[in-house]
Length: 426
Ligand code: GLC
Image: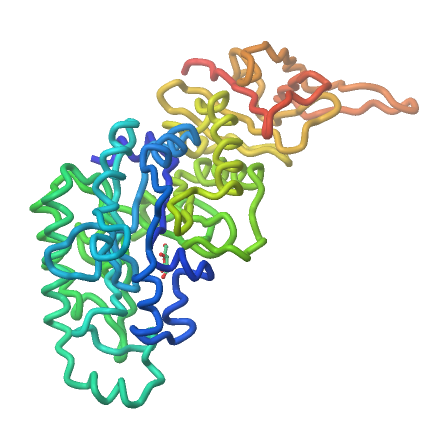
């Protein structure tokens, strides 16, 4: 069921909502303890006049992404779609229309799979109880007035909205719930009625892949993939001693919503390396954009997506459908491996281009052919091990079993060159 997902490897996360206007983090309402009234200024002025979902979808496809996950509702409770359960939605802002539906359609038109993000937290709903993250947590009057809130009513609303999303938008490929914080003052499976919720989800969309934030980690069928956030695990993520599907979600610069003043942007090369590392550990990479309040992807994002897409156009073979290299293949220093099980090819991503030979210990006899992936030019090799040269009368030797590649001296003109190694049969 998750075959398409493991093949895809690379997706686009889209965080878009009212918080694009303050442009200083999607948690602004909670961080700055903004009242509903203060936050309303953004609702009243949300008017993405340059919004062109087809352009976003094109950018995702050109960036090499195979799926996209869109925030239907984030923690502030604002809904991008025309939900019949609330007026707190795009249709009631100056935007005056459903902003989610055309995006879902545009993504599909570009051949991308569609995922929806739905926030379990809701800092707007009148029945949502005040907790440690709620914007009004330090306002005694508000807290007192909210004492009688019945979270159950909010959770009914949540169920209604999830049902709406899963029945009104065609096939949904991924559902990304966010998030649970169980505990005495928290909210988890008991509060969200997570087990009932996931049953409903599976019934409505049997093929959907659900993330792991419903607080059901120990429940069979309670999740389909793990979601390390802005964190790259050292190795393939395991659960109960078994390797499981996982996806790391990452930002360009730290925040998920559009953040005008953040300057901590990763370079295209850094992001490409993260993608390679992720795939080499058996995971997926979900890279986030925070479009602006006018509905555009900002130049900094387009620049990176373009560069990653250009790299993937030549090197997609080392990413899509690839995974961790089989045991016994060790990447030499300064390189990263991925492996395509169907093709039986190893991909050596060379981060530091060598001036001369590249030695792969223990690889002699295992490689039938080697080439640069970017232009299919042969990379010749020897398997002598042993003698590698003289200097000052001393012989330098590599251990028996070493395969020595002779890459071109000039680094290929790509962000990260890849040498494709066709493994010997058997
Ligand atoms: C979170 C954050 C959030 C972001 C997200 C992405 O837990 O609350 O703002 O949407 O994770 O994974």
